[in-house]
Length: 400
Image (spheres, rainbow, N blue to C red):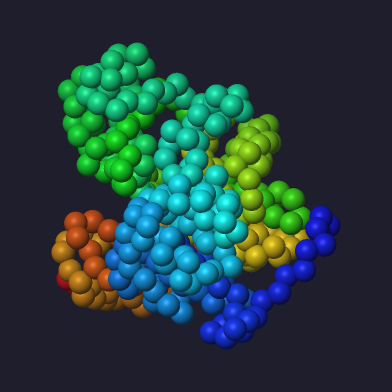
């Protein structure tokens, strides 16, 4: 690919007057990998989250624990640090403040409008279905119990109920019968993040599989990673694999839609675009303007992981190619219980097989169930890679 811009990229020395500063809003395991990639380019990183010692904070130059939904507090921090780039890595942020800051000259990734539209499912669904005319499942937004019950009648059972704003699938459930209606409402409300009070009811789409298509908008144009398949439980990803086998026609349609949606959002960066696929038919589901949890498989499957691609794109650096290494998979390490001093044991057993890797996120505590790490594997086939990744994850034990 040819570089379409003549933009010169300059990066100074961290912790000096020439330092190029990036502020990460959200410092979980995905943010941690972004910070590590930024550090490889000598970028000075300020990590922010609602709790101290989050994973990305442990590898950043400075950290701050604030309520990112508090616009005044967010503005105060941005103005005091004056970063060159602001990178939102979660949805629960005062996006109206980001819009104001962008108008005042601060650069938000990919742009403040994209962060605002994708902070909840309503903004992006209306953009895709109503403005761009892209095929999605039927949907209704509801703000109270009365609207919700009417919405269920209108959409019909079975259907899927989600909070308009949540993290990692929390609050998402399927209504299979009348007995599920109110429990799904309660679960959606309990899983909501931020101040969003609405839920979305989606008509059930008959699909063969769902994919994440990692889409990169950058100085060279638009690039795509191989499609990623995944398995969920309770709305949260448990394992992913790459590539997901699909027809050339379906893949081409997904790429066309992903390019349209991400271009409409604007800005440079990596986007995780989700689709339901039935044969050659595709249905747009969601998009995140940041690395995607299912995309952690790219840490072993590609020469440039989704995190490396995101960093190159936001820094204005070229991405001439993305080298896919072969069939790969990821499997999460889940911890159950209450502890602020989790100890992982038998770690060596998880790395016995060839072409396996692990990442332990270093999250400071667990309360209930929490994703604390991921196992990665390559194989001669996707099936072999999945088997190896799941086997590795099962061999890691822990004490609380």
